[in-house]
Image (cartoon, rainbow, N blue to C red):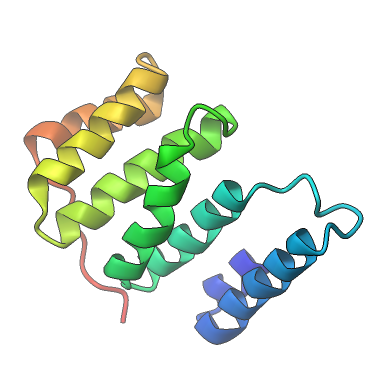
Amino acid sequence: LAQMLADQGDRPRALATLDEIDALRKQKAAGFSSLSREKLAYFRGNLLFWFDEYSRAVEELSLAAAARHELDLNTALMACMRLGQSYDLMRRRREAQTAYQQAMELAPGSEIARECQRYLTRPYNRKPTV
């Protein structure tokens, strides 16, 4: 739901949905108790990334990337890559390269690793969405 709201450009409702999920997780509500704080941090960081809020995205994605060995592989890879992309967009190149290398170490032959390899030599860049 949060992603659908974000896709419609409804940033406040998208982030509020993740806040509600986090509250349910903390209450250990049925179906939410197994959701890790780090996985939720990835979801929040990814939305913040797409809303061009890179500093806040870095806070969340750093938490997820730090737990990359405990997360499922797809989430771990994406957290590291998005962290690197956020750093690149903030002109923090060394930190970006470290994040890309972390993704590459997780799954060296993956498509994400190949994409991160390209970002090691050419920084990620995109136009702001707003």
